[in-house]
Length: 143
Length: 249
Image 1 (cartoon, chains in turn yellow, orange):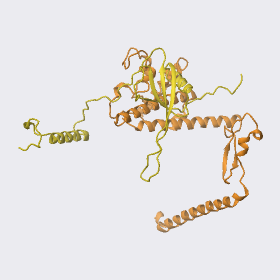
Image 2: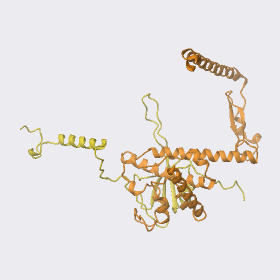
Image 3: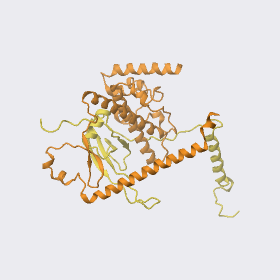
Image 4: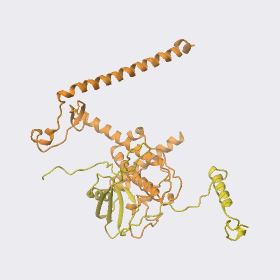
């Protein structure tokens, strides 16, 4: 056998972030943000070994982020670059990015700070609303 | 007292779970651990062993999705303002664990970190506050401590077996600017005298740089002297303000 032995990483330090795709993707495509040093083979092995997700294809691209923004000292501030991986799942599986922040009815405890804040906000909103007896007519029309 | 006994019992239970499942499927076993002792948040033991019967929440259109589900929190935590989580692992707690347990814990922490990063990015996308962002710091600290303990064990083993202090060989060298630094060796297929790019990289300081090295050394010594004098002056001032006779009285 020629060449160096197979590179094996125990305790990988790579972090994958699943992101909602900006543009419409096919149903079997999952979009990840990966560290710049990761390759397509790394992504495939990572998902197959750690998450046991069957991977058919991986395509990557590097997103360059701006160095144009300036801070209060007029120094250029770089937004860090990142690599995006488009992973297509094998075995005709599909994935739809779920809604992680659904609207939930919160019921605050009696006498807590949040309850008082909510009440205050409700009162404010009531005050801002126009007089319902005017029947939708704005204040511009006098009387 | 009762709490410590409870935690000890729970730990023993998890140890047993880990040893039983280690020869079957390491991925299932990783879920038996969690970031803290009293596994309140996730009933990982239950959900992994009885996944099909209990709590079968269908998220997506197709079949088996337990792989990508791990990138998200438990469905009952979606939309919450705060999510409860325990304390991070301390070095003292981690030193007691075996190498297999630490290996599995690393992957548990890695998956947790991926999940938190996913939630963070989605929160930024939706312009909403992320629920309990302190979880990220806790996981990062736990992973850092785990890493230190594994390197400690590796160093100890290497010292005992070979007597080498470092895993990667290196030596002190002087660069062109007169600064002494630790040069870490790289592996090359050819010797250094055939490597033209390596020969262009000079590891000696030219003669005209020597005065600047001397000046920087003088600067460093001056700053060290000033710091020592400042500390001595401060101690003297404090001793004058609070003499020892008053302390005894």
